[in-house]
Length: 503
Image (cartoon, rainbow, N blue to C red; front, top):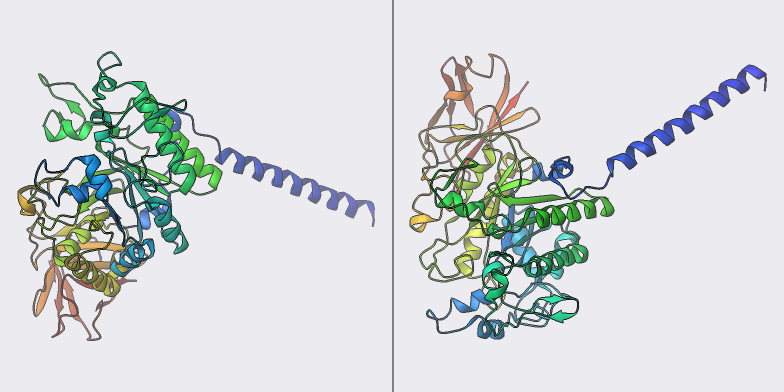
């Protein structure tokens, strides 16, 4: 080899090594550990896979399911725990139902404030493997969901834990709380606020479950930050504390919030997977996680991804409303499909609460509506899954009349909008725009948003079809809108989807 060639090969080798080192440095920098402060945590980005998720299912199941079987005050929480047998629970059957319904993700209510944690805990004996059904609810569901490639969401509802403190809390191998005694002193022992022992026990439990089951998303309910209560009382509006109102919040201190979130984010780095945290209202600073609206909806197209956890049952009996209660009638599939479509068009997603019975099975009336949702999604899911909003989220006369937390649960669910054939919602994916009509329009439909004086110019549309129908759709476009001549047969029971291919 001559000297010139040798020098060239040497330079190539040096550049190759240099690039490799640089790439490794970049990869290592991207895995920089999150610190327990808001500035560091805000560097976290919402995963792309989360944006594709539009529909999930989770399940409230616990001793509260037993309590609602009795009249008020006929049974204590401790007695309910003993009677909660769950002898027909099957993680496989639960995930079968989720998939049959068309859910993309799912998970357990990991902890609902009763002191019983729904996993095999090494910290406390007050867990679902030693009490109640004596099964690892969280662990078995996580394993089954991950096996089928479904992201796992685990929710922690610890508001009752702050105030009622059922169960034992272990600190340095010493049980400091007896579930049969009055433990109220721990709620005020920190200069009138909740003691650090409580928050240490809270952190220990949740971090333990994160370690054991590696969830993709963790979601903190109202006890995490407490701002929902201020919003519901109209003491806080869009993040502003109003004059002459109480400033009291029942929540985890910021130091514990930061510690918990940074722990989870860093675990995601360790597992080499992206994770997400979900929270209520203004419980943490914006830009760190995804906000959730409890049993409600939002007005208008939102800039950031959001989620609504929606109860499948209407609220007639307000005892443990999120747990199965035959007095609380099930929302019908058509209503839930319309809500899912409306939320998706506004950059949201729905997490549907499907509560099992005390024995661990789902009631027949619950499965009936779920499977009808699944049938609709099997035909029309391409207009939901993996989509993004359009410049208009929709058109038509109907809008959410009671937005925000609990807005869709009040008055037995009567505030939930009743959409018409004039109500259309839009989603899009690649070069396809989906126009979803929330009721059957009959022989023809005019979509004003698709006129040639709007976002779509003349000649932008390549073809129009209806999902689930083989009949040809005749259409014409003018300045005022797009006129569609519809097939003679409605392809599905609920909303119908027009697939508009753009050039």
